[in-house]
Image (cartoon, rainbow, N blue to C red; front, side, top):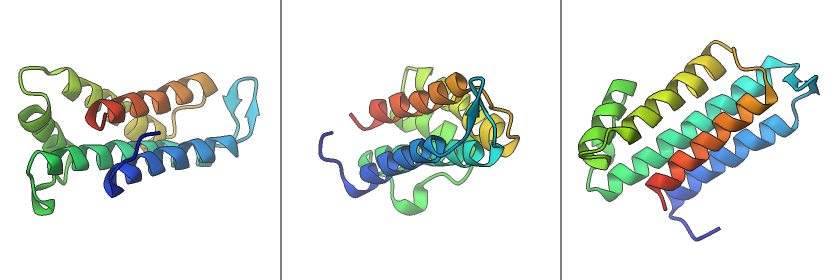
Length: 132
């Protein structure tokens, strides 16, 4: 893995934490048995995404005080600073918000091992686009 700044390291650290939480989760018939570690893993992966966006915005010249404080703020900042003329990044963030934060963490609706792993991988792919 290439060297990263402290905050970039934070994004990957949260992502690694998400994977560690899933390793400890019980699995039966390709489903996670216990919701708690899955919810925590989804929360950690979503936080990894936010950390990566924060770092990318700081690299674009925003100050810590200018970092968004809401999902809508993050979408506007991505559109304005990170994906000018390309809405794909905003759509990817929105899907990660819906899957990791809402379905995975907030509502605890993700149970299939493959689905959860794909969402964690989606977070990693998104982070790598922001912090190549």
